[in-house]
Image 1 (cartoon, rainbow, N blue to C red):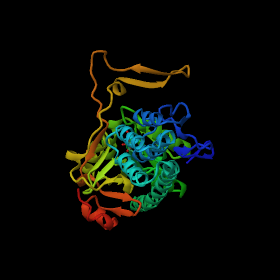
Image 2 (spheres, rainbow, N blue to C red):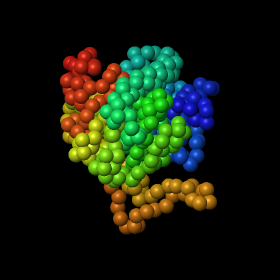
Image 3 (cartoon, rainbow, N blue to C red):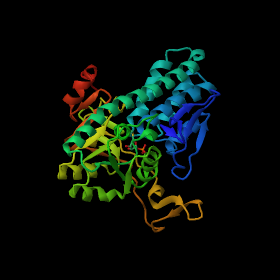
Image 4 (cartoon, rainbow, N blue to C red):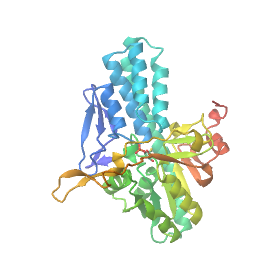
Length: 368
Ligand SMILES: CSC[C@H]1O[C@H](OP(=O)(O)O)[C@H](O)[C@@H]1O
């Protein structure tokens, strides 16, 4: 997407071809800061510390992280170590593990001298594939938004609620849940977005709000607990969220709080859509609540809040009592029964094994 009028991706190969460029998302919205990753450890830290985050972007950055590692040492041992170090950065987003498996598949058979160029090429391909997937997903999602606007009689605004950040900052470009919203806005549809702040890392209030503001999409930041009230009072026409891992039967892991939004949507008859690029499908799993690993992060992300003082200085303050521990679960799982439909790059389908098979018949026979 454009930042200050310049087309920008969330990760890129630096012009000197010696490093990977990223937007340091821990600095947004108060500062737009880019950074160079030059080593495996810098790439791993960027993912772990959420300087880059979002399932597709984590996968793309990890793929480039393998390239950075092989630039220093392209031996079998170095490749094995790179895959292990990057694989341990975050557990829930399956895109990380899918991208690393893809790099393993491509690089293992090669001679070390061939691996560096092959790794750079495959990482770049994965980035371009992500962008193409997100564009296609956006087109399919746009049809749902247009249908909702027609159903509403084309009156007022199309009120969409989203949780966390599944915009272009969560991917290489265009985003997943926000992709149809951008297309709808650009097509002149009067869409308005209720942006869940998404405690504790505030990906909604700090990243989604920033993205939508940059693109001129009307939006309102709300506390995480407001969505149910808005749905009860007819102020939400549909919900659309991203996902970090969706099982073969349509159970959806996404940022903590998504499940509660889906319950409120079900109770109020509000359509609840999940933007699902196919690399985020884990075909090996079925029961998401039981099988998807849920990341637990440091409690300081809950007890401390970072923001800008009146002086303009950015500071971090503690908001909980010194003696109170914090539990920081980063994801939850929304059972397929609460999902109205899955929006993929191949079309929209029910959140079910049959639904996913209908769009991905080549995966029908994949079993653990
Ligand atoms: C398009 S994936 C976006 C997905 O990733 C976010 O998690 P995190 O910010 O912790 O990486 C969140 O679950 C979003 O829905």
